[in-house]
Length: 178
Image (cartoon, rainbow, N blue to C red; front, side, top):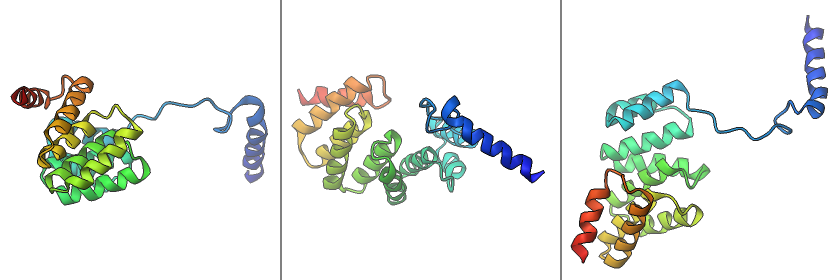
């Protein structure tokens, strides 16, 4: 029986260059959808059920699960934990959208505004369409009393995410500056 398995493996291995049946010769595939358990945690986060999302996502090594875990922790005001988890995600993917937002939220809430500005600026430089990087960098600038920088970031945030839940508040802040 074992010889049959080896033969099949060898035949498939030889066929790869001819048929394009291996990953080295295959066309790029879209990123896989999150597993059902990860998606359930993400759905809990999106429903505003942050404690349940945290419980569902904790310990899952999937990078998206960890990004949403960081976001859940930030929403639960557990900023130091959120910072650690987000930092880990960002080590492998510095522009992971959810992790960038959670990281910015955690840093600003902990008054680490210089680091927030530096790290969010780097993320924006790498990927200029990260709406929440502008939002949280704007928040950091506000704490640093840099109104013109805050206004610029908030305007960019509104261009990128005009329907975000924070948009009405950002519009009110900008209107108050005029």
